Length: 243
Image 1 (spheres, rainbow, N blue to C red):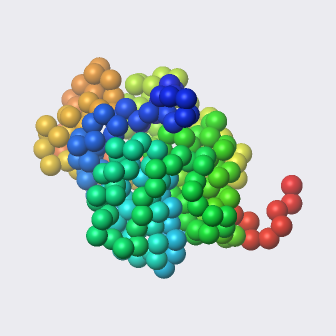
Image 2 (spheres, rainbow, N blue to C red):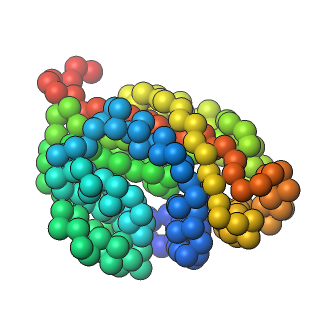
């Protein structure tokens, strides 16, 4: 989820869940937002039909086929090579998708050449990620949208567990950062549903420390619980931007 320690001199912030537990993160992806509320929200502000989409921090490519079903072209960007390899394997049969190993602040994409840049729970967004935002705005065509989706730590129960596990994380500060950068905020309520209590337990174990994971497990009755996301959207100006 969130990390403070940079993994190497490239500036890439390691993702301790998907980097180390990709099979469990796959199960988590399948359990997340089973009603498709996040994609519905994205489509309402940045419909990607017949457009070019860049998915920044695409991981193992879980969301790429969803975009590819309607988009003209999809580019997945992933800095961690093992995940990029997995993403390429996932989309091998999709002729309108490619995956590139790169970082958010150095996209191998031409100026003003894409319509939508999507980043979901990607570590380089939030305070201190100005270069990534600037790079996204560079590759967007005028009127294109940068859509950043993250978890809403102000909403129970998941947000309570986040704040307990990361007491230094300040959701108000993150929201203020995006607002100052010109993003509009929409909150999206979703439902996560797991196939078994064991899978639920294992996923909580890669998202939280042992104490919080145990508490969350006891607080969940059954296989489902509610999770709220934040969707931050910023459009590239279509004319001269006055400052």
